[in-house]
Amino acid sequence: MLRPEPLPRAVRLLLLARVVNQLGAFSLPFLTALISSDYGADLTTAGLVAAAFGLATIPSRLAGGGLADRIGRRATIVLGLVGCAVAQLAIAASSSLAWAVAAAVLLGLAFELYEPPSQAIIGESVPERQRVRTFSLFSAALAAGGTGAGLLAALLGRWDLRWLFVADAVTCLGCALLVHLALPGDRPAAPGGGAEHASAVVRPLRDRALLSLLATGTAYALINQQTVLALPLALARQGRPAADAGLLFTAAAATTILAQPLIRLRRTARLAAPVALALGHLLLAAGLAGYALAHSLPALLASAAVWSLGDLLIMGRVYALVTSLAPRGGTGRYLAVFGTGWGVAATLAPLLATRVLAAAGPAVLWTVMALLCLLLAALHLRVTPRHGVRTDEPVAGAAPTGSPVPERS
Image 1: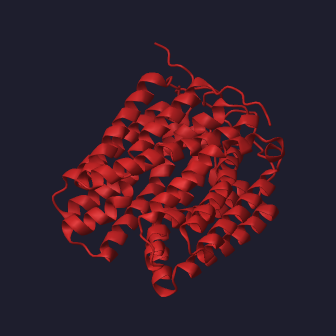
Image 2: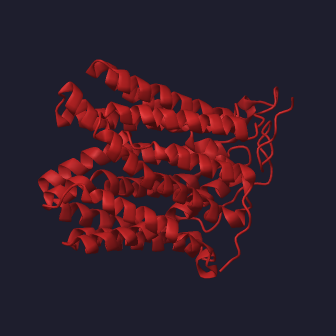
Image 3: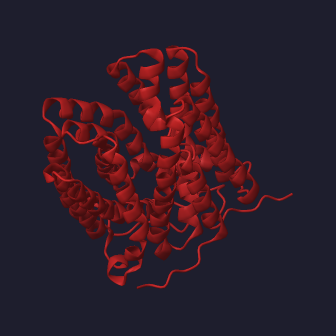
């Protein structure tokens, strides 16, 4: 096993901030329930509101990447967290369906501003050999915060669903304060050097390798969203308590945390990116096939552990690869373009899950997702680059790569 190297302070801070923020990130799954219970909307309307939120996250992710490379990473992270808090408080205080929908769209527009700058700091603050491990730790931080979030949601949700959004807003503000006070400021493009010139150089939509990863990453994100959004409904249609989904989510999160040493194994670290991603999708396929065939809770828990191992292999590797593809000074925009796949998935997943479950049932849904994983495994072996081709020349006017540059007083 490879000996872990110490992480930079900025990365450790972001991991801590991620856990704090994720502790409150339990309100979103209850958005449709709030709209249905408090405003009498039918499930179709509630689903459309959730889809509108997902659609709004696409420009949010792109804006996060652009702002990260222009006004700085720290400022963009704080802006996104404060925007999320404002939108969540607006949802909690909304007095009509129209106000709730407007606040949900505002939440989507702020929701992804955080991701590209935080991922860019991680990708640029550690050497290439550490990127897979560091991005995997970022996923583990999400899982760690998520386990506590479920318990808080169970407590507050019994009181009033609106308090879930208030608590989520409080954790966002706490995370924003932590980032503002503890993360060093970073210097955006120098005046006259120019954001305009940098924009002319960084063209992520013309990078065929990135577009290939965007296509496969969007399909992966759609599968990932099914394991979250469709699972409670699928369990209910199988005659099991929908609350069992919480146990499966906990099993997956625990696996993600406990299996982190696998990333440091020499054999795992030496795998080429296409092979690692293909293996991850094979594990996803096995876990989803288990969901289709399992009839007992222990079998479902084992399936959740298997697909989460696949998720562990994929998440760290793919973000490290995207980071290495980006030209210096353009990491935020590359990660933003790649991340739009999650917005597409968040828009399509609720519509796809409900229709397939209604028409064909859970076994067909999980089988189709498992077959899609097998297709993605084959595609990665054929089209995914083995290594990034990041240039050594920085984008004109951009701060050099590495730890954030402290602001001068």
